[in-house]
Image 1: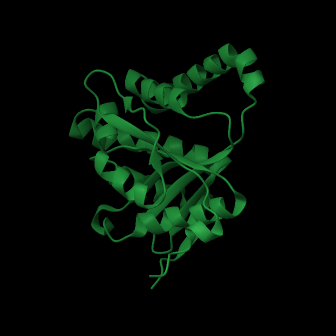
Image 2: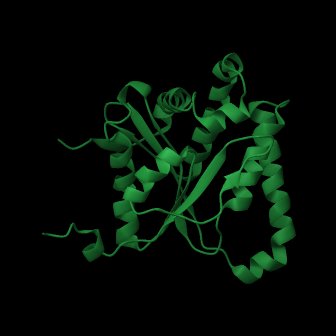
Length: 218
């Protein structure tokens, strides 16, 4: 039986925030941003709410019909390299401003909220339009059942049809194996968070032709 998937709307906001909060409580990156279980338990959901609001406004959130998993996608337009070179300083200031606004909205005294946003923006590839898998969350009791793969493949099929690449940051070496099975490849440069923080693996997927996407017969 396939996994039923639908597009989330504003009425699903609390469901998505709860799913992400539960799914990422023990994630190494979340643990770095919000060290200490009690601190994370009371504050982490604010960051998940901010991410949810951004994607509801500018991207797409898919949820399983049973409400146990969700995926947040943002379309990233192609960058004009000449314009980027000319306006690079202004863009860097804009990214910094966005990171500052995120920190002020989520946890004003926590510099790591701003830092993680800035570092991820700096590492994000530019120059080609692509779909960005910002986050994918599965409720802890349903992890390992293939729900995350189903959500990702739901969008990758559209990427292949449109000829669009996709990008994500894996937050653990274990999760890179899942993404590799879906066609993503490590870009070659890890994102190492400071102060003894965890490592992230940026991964890129070129669109597949219909022939390449079909399983080969033996």
